[in-house]
Amino acid sequence: MQPPPENADPGSVHDAGAYADLAAQAAAAMGRDDLARRVAAAKARLQNSGTAIAVVGEFKQGKSSLVNGVLGIDICPVDDDIATSTLTVLRHGDEAHAVVWCAEGSERVTRDFPVAALPSLVTEGSVLADGRVELVEVFLPNPLLAHGISIVDTPGANGIRPGYTAVVLGYLEAVHGAVFVTDASSPLTHEELAFLQAAVAVSPVTCIALAKIDLFPHWREIHSANADLLQRAGLAIPVFPVSSALRHAALVLNDGELNEESGFPDLIRFLDENLVQRATTIAALGMFDTAIFCLNEMRFATAADLAARRSPDTMADRLQAFRQAKERLERLKVGNARWATVMNDGLGELVSQVDHRFRRRMRDLQKAVDDEVAKSDPAKIWPDLTARVREQAAAGARDVIYEMETGADEVAARITALLAEDDLLIGSAVDSRPELELTKYWAPRPLSRLSVASGIGMGFTGLRGAQGGLILFGMLSGLAGIAVSTGVLAGVAAAFGGKQLLEERKRQVAARRQEARTAIRQSLDETEFEVGKTLCELSRDLNRRLRDHYSDRIGERFRTCMDAAASLERGLQEDEAARSARVAELSNQAGQLDMILDKLTRRRNELAATGMRQ
Image 1 (cartoon, rainbow, N blue to C red):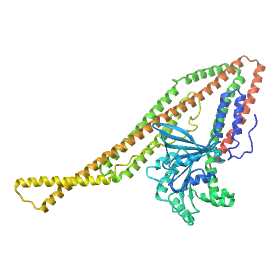
Image 2 (image 1 turned 90 degrees about the vertical axis):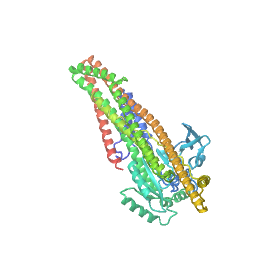
Image 3 (image 1 turned 180 degrees about the vertical axis):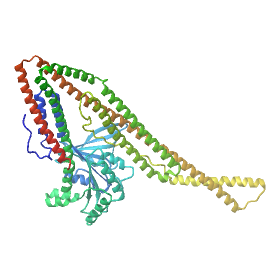
Image 4 (image 1 turned 45 degrees about the vertical axis):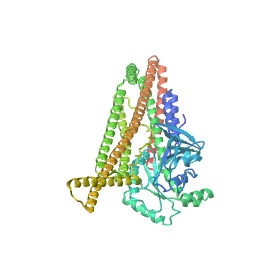
């Protein structure tokens, strides 16, 4: 085994792979191929660790231009007359191509497209002949993306459009950080500040790009005003003035000074230091934790074997203890083991509770909507009402995922505590969570609007009411032998016509109320259906991850006990010379493991102390 590097920078993770190799070599040397594979898998996760950065903001603020500037290529469509309307994820790939996720009925399918087709896929009105575009993944052989970075270009929101904040925040929960884009034409609005406050609570790292500084000579005043607004709002968010036009010109002319003037180098350095390096540090810490656990497992078996041979009179008792441990672990490996029952019951109860809370939330929302609709004309409140409903429905969907993951952590803690009773200390099961995308949110159809034809219809309704009133009043006055003047007849006609018109208006308002209730009820039903489907999929994924994690750890400890028992059985047959030689071998092995453990533990603590402060 080669020693790990001694002079590595404590804040760097580039040497982490060498430590992983060292632990894997130790496992292979001891015949623990299972532990060697686990360390190798942790190293692979480190090498493939990615950083997802979301670019968010209002329409026409320069988000797509900023993405192009960061990547150094013109890939995202930029035009004054169009706007990005589809979530676009840019990743590294050996060949440039786009993969489109689209909805065909109730199914989601993928299709490949050339990158040249991107403008027709991600801008407003992007609908395929037989499906609706939901997500576009773009793969590019780009040096920045090759470092494991993924950039998410999100659709814009006009005035941080009401009803879409929760959707965008759902995206931010699945990424490592966000860049909020606002142009230099005016200071941050109240809506933008409110969104930033919510984004900071969700996204680990957030910064602001003040775009289009080349178009607005007074951008420095805007920059200063934004700094004051952020300070008063209690938001410690760095702001980077940038110009995509200057960046493009600098790259074309290969002009370093112009590139610095564009502001992009400062922004990219910030993203590298605070997102890319931090995400890699987290992955490296996970690798170190896995390697240290595997080394401790080997150290446990070595120490037990060494202690038994140093005290031969206790070897038979130790062998019996290992055999009993094997039997307990055998029982833990079966499907009806107590820990598996705790897992299944815990996740089942969790799903039931989360689903009940979400459905209750939707029922309460429906009741509140019904009460509000009953008190007003839906035509007057429909935009604001649907925005609030969409916001609350999206927030409810986000809370479902949060509650499921938090509840799964609690179930894992119960399983870990239960296994600790059998002296099986295997740690948490939640190594990493899959990215979850909330991309399906309902778009309620507009209420029926009062058209010219319906206005004319209401006029005829009033005339019919007036005509009917005249006929009735004339007939009754004729029967009574009363002569009625023209003015009186006109008044009677107006009264009857007005009454008929008022009743028609009431009827139309009642129809709109019923239409509004039905539209929102259908939309909430669709939301419940989509969230229910996501809940089932998430439940299965959590069940599989917990099951595989604990099954693997139990299997590793079973292998440890099996190997230790086999070694002790051989030890009972050894003579004094063979036992002394084996003690010397085990002592050397234990010393090597202690040395490697000490190096990895110190390196891990150094990395945690320096890397996580970035």
